[in-house]
Image (cartoon, rainbow, N blue to C red; front, side, top):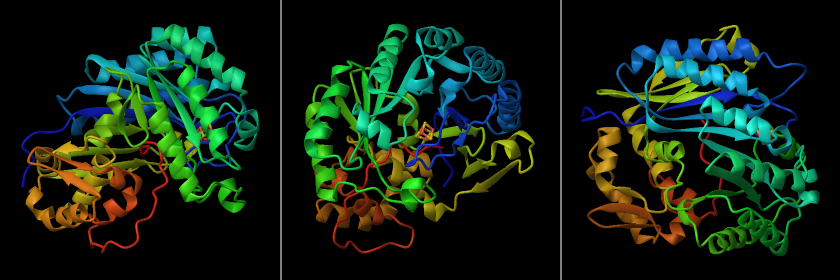
Length: 394
Ligand code: SF4
């Protein structure tokens, strides 16, 4: 069935370098060696945008997210050139959200002001922990004091600041997690993300795993974060916002919107009236710069769309309006009735005639809930606690 309307469109730009590779990180990030090729990379990002234009003629951007890696390693001048170049090629909605990720070890007040003057409207600061021992175990390049100073400097320059925190860290107990969660709350930022450390393949922690809290302890930490951040709107599995500060860019992923993905290893999704496609860029920065492997693009098979939709939309605490599934996938919701009924009977899902949402139990056992929507189906078995990861990075 053709889509009756195209979803909102966002843009994700990936900056793939970091000062140092963190041992738990499976993002496409590469330890820098020497000066960064800022000018060459920004020019490549903009040529990447140009290549995508024919697929999105006439559509406007609701948000831009500059992620990484560590985008704050780039100078405000480079970010200014990038954002000016994007605006010259695509129209941004009035008041579009423009986020930049920052590592507390790479920013100071003047740099934040420079990013703001370049057109950034929102800063996401990756703190992870306020415990010096934990920061060391996580291989972070900043101290807890530097993290607090970076947050203060970000708040001085921006109304919209996110703080990223992790829990279930090596040898962390509930009291230590509580101290971290309370320290994050005390920063007074309008948006908090709290997610569980997980061991991912191709990371240093995967090859040499540290002692991590059990699933039950991790679940207690998650509940503790939800209780501590009760004055925030808990709108997504790991995201908490003051009114008016929900991350519009991430909401677009969770609502199965479209996004252009530019930069090394970036992924994107573009809908057309008769199909949904995904594109992907070369992972290695040099390959991306040299256009060695330009990009791959493929249509999402229709039988995979329900799972892809649910993978995103069921992360939302308030779920989604029943009409959204058909709007985004072109498939009737009726095709999922059996799975919805089973998930509901297991207490993992709640629904009425207007919305479908995960239950409190469904949020804790999200993997089990999602398994009902896999293309080949899978019967429910003993629920498995889902390690809570941040929003899927494109
Ligand atoms: S966690 Fe962040 S700072 Fe650390 S390597 Fe990954 S992207 Fe870079």
